[in-house]
Length: 108
Image 1 (spheres, rainbow, N blue to C red):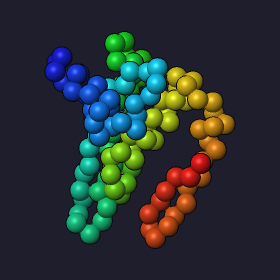
Image 2: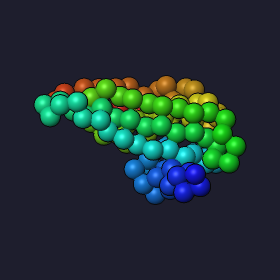
Image 3: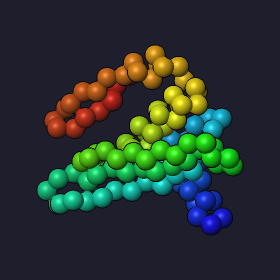
Image 4: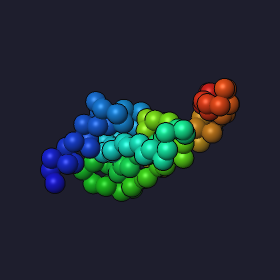
């Protein structure tokens, strides 16, 4: 158990989940991608809980055909910022999504 939790913490601090690494909040998480078929983009997955030492919330994010799991980690980071009031609501909801050549990107 301790190794699994330490690994999840390191995945957020130094690994594939860095977009969910938030100042002032110790997050543990794991990314993943699920391939449905080779002709479509992979599904992006991220599961996490926070805070590390005394969990209060667990979040699972799945973005269908989301390409890479770091996108799911980024979305989850915004959810955690909102929940723990690390950023005000207006700043979190100010972004827009645009579609370019079939790829969706987030702009602030």
